Image 1 (cartoon, helix red, strand yellow):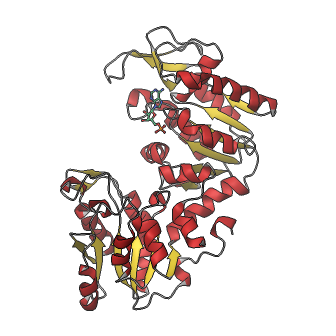
Image 2 (tube, protein in one colour):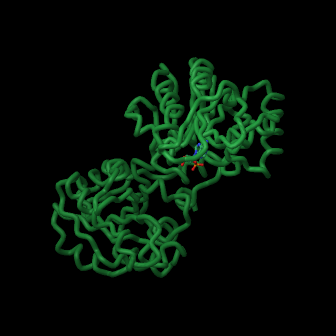
Image 3 (cartoon, helix red, strand yellow):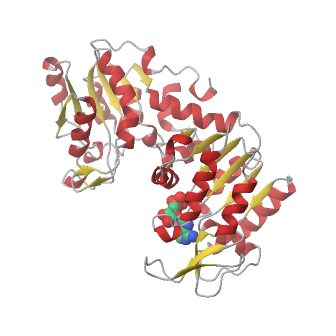
Length: 399
Ligand code: AMP
């Protein structure tokens, strides 16, 4: 087992029978027209929830949703999540309107086996984001066992993640947390070579710490997305009106030299799909080479680049992918990302890990998600972890 989980109990190593269990989950799902639009995170939380129910726990579930200013922001209510949970579990989900009330204390007494409690959006209470100890004590007053299974929120020192864990003696991590940490550690601790990091998305600046943590571990980097234009600019290649981070051009140039000095590879796009605006109806075309004409923006990797990347990566044994290759939300610029997803899906015996966020959304969109070794449920949390930072939601278990 990974050193990151050393000494931390898992949910099935603590006694839950007849215990009042407070389970922090990440049920932060996209909501559209009052319904859950993507229930990936709810489904990912089911193993721990079902296990606790089977063990005879009296269960209080808790999560945040979006970024509400106050409890008046009703569009951030967990009501649609309660509904979806009810459908998936066949269990009555009692939604507590005020996440800080002591309602669960009384409800616990009469709770039958076919009922669970869900607290309203934890961020409806200001104390959640402030890691407020009093709020945590309120929750602890009706909690025998604390379970954290909210990987996607564990990079935040919030009351339900840190102060509550400090206030309850018996605690454990859920199945999802264990699985996430095991898979993400595998890529840091025991990756098999050839090991490639595929980095895309909008900004180099967001990925600098990740690159630094990976440079001595990987055999090569593959760069795509808007990030690529800062690197091409550093090589003196014309990038037209593409997104460039002017203050990161020097870093990009130095990085290319540092990677090559280690006898490793850094692959950059050799052609692009370009347009003059992001509008879906704006004409787009592929360039012949890596240079982009003035007034045109690079918005996806081109067909030659897709082939180059597929060819270079065909013997990979480990793939870490973070960030789309283009503006994949627009079908005109989604092909690069989708083609890469299908190349990875074809890899035999490779450990393929998607770092969550937009890349996870893209892989889900491609319909190939079951062909990957692991797709993280936490974008920000997985990035923090892979950058080498301890997550507060894990380190609190080691105190
Ligand atoms: P990130 O949050 O850094 O992973 O970036 C993801 C975002 O980068 C997505 O919303 C993409 O639309 C965007 N993106 C990817 N490639 C490009 C590009 N070539 N130009 C502008 N935006 C891009």
